[in-house]
Length: 221
Image (cartoon, rainbow, N blue to C red):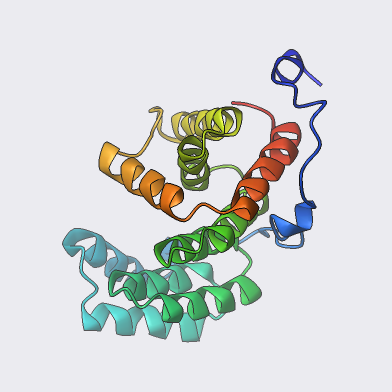
């Protein structure tokens, strides 16, 4: 253990629950050789979606077509699910994401989006489970799961866990883009408000266990 671990007492604290209650240890990203540019039609549809912020019916058809044509490629699953999330059809989005996690090589981004679905449905325990799965399945280039669990930790007064998660988020975003990113105030406040409203003992234990496990395994940025 390092000096920070000793100062924070991480090396003396025991996780309150088993790690398999916190994330799926069997899910890991695999190498995906396909770049988004290999499918120009899909690339253009994603850009149209980003430009207008509204999933037009023709774009949904393009995303669905790409998903059927390449059922082991994660990108169409992500955008199909996002279209449903925009319409607040979270059960449909979760069905799509679960299928993608089962079939695709890249799973972590789908796990993160599944976590966001559960968060929107106010199920914090399942949300934490999938955010933590996303973190441990991926290549540590996605800062979003860290911000979500960091703000939950802030809402619950879990200062060590919140600080660690937000520090890693800032470190990852700085490495990827040259800017240490956090969500704008309204998004942060929304996450913290829901976390405070829907707090459960199990959710707190899950976050504490993940912090003790992941901070030792992944360290700090």
